[in-house]
Image (cartoon, rainbow over all chains, first blue to last red; front, side, top):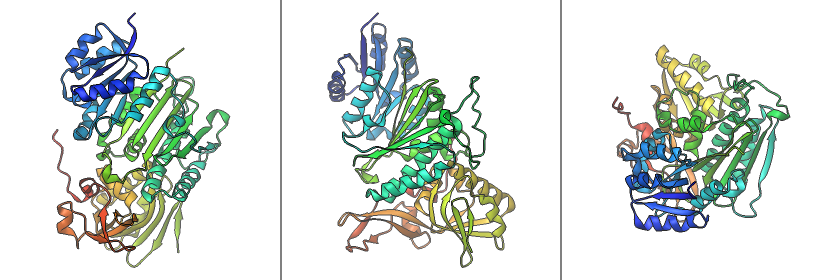
Length: 312
Length: 165
């Protein structure tokens, strides 16, 4: 069995070196390829736990075969790095349905996000919004015990964010994301033994008392870099492919408002959306809203990560 | 007198209906169409602070039904949360016409951020070229800068060209 490693496929030498330095701290062996073809050849000899690919690869006719080959070799996560110049490729990347982690970044690369992602993958320690916030950040926690609590929690969250000095825009984005994530956790997450989502079709304005098995945990905090909202349900019924399909609803622009729109809207309303999945046990979604820069100084696209806990 | 549906309030104004609060699963927007006068429903949306995906669905239903009934919808003083949805989801636009809307501005000089009202007709030429109108900071009188990407924020004003099939 080949040694677990990380494979970087990027045509730019400087970016290769920067990513190598960042990921080198994980202690895993780093393999580097300039192009997908070279990466494909390397995959015959290595079994990377993580592959990191430049966003321009989305246009390559070999991209799908590369990701398929990586998966066949046991790769748990395919991360794509996307610089400012390649933002218009986001729909194409989402359509591929194979990229589990998209890191939109200013050049050369956003070290902190890459490091967090790599550590989570390599250590298998996925859960918790703390990983995205600075040390010492206060986290507020609320347990949702009835469906109607959603609107009160969302309104309270908005007021609290404004009271912390954040702008109306940040409060508005956070409200939207929190509302969608809580609604998803209360209504879409619960499944019975046959996998039937028994609350998905229930009207959202009907009151439901949630017993302990259905409680939803909401945590949020702000460290002056991000407002972060974490929503956790105890079902773990959301799967990777459903998420990637929902994110790919770039035609949310033409949507009539069907299922999955909540995830698509959440993705487009925050700067970074993180899915931590423990199948059959729990689903945790973390939304990060960047409060450091005005909208015009940021990249008009969002990052996402889909992490799936390995079975023991 | 205020008609309250869930978290949405509807008040009669001068030839228009003023909406405020949140548009969500409880809003029953299609019922608003019965308040149209001479085939026109005028909605003032300055007070709408929030709309979720269920509210968006309700909004799209209202737009579809308005088209079916031949009712024209005029949207005045549209708040930023609604503008974001008009930009993200084409179906939310229906056949409605936006006559004025709020847009984010920031002052580089004093740091003030504010939503400013933009009249579509008065700024038609600039908006057609995706140029944000000039705004003076009410606090320090410096020039405020438009605080979003114009090609993204003003895209609801641009007629959508059909995508190639």
